[in-house]
Length: 566
Image (cartoon, rainbow, N blue to C red):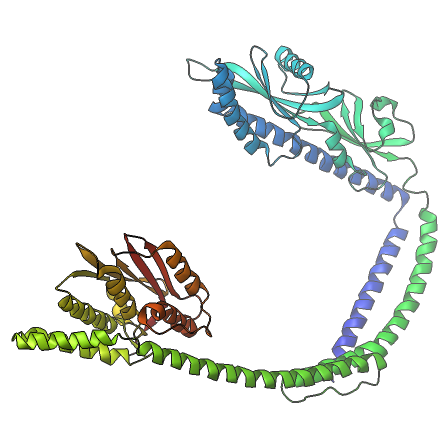
């Protein structure tokens, strides 16, 4: 059982590392002086100040970015300069869409208001009152501020003002401004518990007054009036704003229970050593060894050497082993039965497919053969021996390939069969049909199952074009699309009624192998071809039908790109 020593070594290594870390932490803390602790706390305060300032500044910079982007929009400029009421509200909708898209990534924005130079305002986001909008206008218009803190409707807001200019004349002319507001209460989330530094007190200061703090008792007071129990450790201005961040440390908070900590830590270390020794002994005897045994024997089963796991002598693990052995026995029996059943189904499917192929191969209309032979005789009687010979040659080629079943043949050979079939039909119907081929040369190296395209062409001629007055046109297109061969057989004939088309499409979408259609090419061809393709190549391949009544039908065939190895 080679797995046991590595497991025990890993367990011992982990326990030793864990114990060593505890000792290092304890001794390091024990030999740190109170002065060093205080310096560390002050450094933490400086770091926290910088973090909070950056977070608050980032939020305000996002506001400034949104306002400047919106202010640079020609749509906003045109909106602020508009005098026609109808056009004003029409442009307001466009500007609203632009502002919402620009501001959507910034979740801290509460209100967005625009002002004209005449003091007309429009609220795009938020719902501050009319009086608040007027107050906001005078605050920025008279003092020319960019950032400010203002109380509106009983709520403190941080505001950013961006002017909007019209540069179409000789020089830029200010036509209005856009103001973005965010409630300062949202900044309270940033303050949290002092940036995660425990007892640190964090505050946002404006003009030497505490606006927000994670200690609510400090809000509204001056920083010079902080209680003596707080030691101001660090302050930092928030760039681009009249705000600053202040971090304070409660006096004595860092050292109140330090001596007790030393005693508790020593007791915990001693107990920890005892627990580790007992834990190692227990895990090694009752878990590691049985687990190593199970792992070793499972690997042997995976390699085919064993069919059952031996007992370990441990009750809990032996119950698991018993379940595993039962599962192995059931799995082996299930796999055997599954193999037998799959073979049976496969044989049955192959047999069914051969039956369907036999039926499909017999679907050639007897009238077609009889009529073709009659036409050959007529041509011979008229001494048109060349045409009769060509017709006989075409019929022989069709009959030859009709009985090849699912053999894979070159695509161009299959197209020769189709060309012969169309030529015979044209002879029968007085050159009624006009047909065109558009086949990519690259398909000359590809192969496909025989007797796939001919039934589709027959459907097009017999059911689509035979009774058509005027030009009866058939178009066959073949192309290679990545790893798929695609054919389109199109006609300009009678088309298919919508109800019948839906029935055909539903049948092609879910052909049931057991639902065998009635004989007759018209009822069998499409469904049988779909089954042949899906059974042989999978559900990603097959045929689809599109048709417009009175205009024509297009059948699309999708086959995998298979190449002739010869």
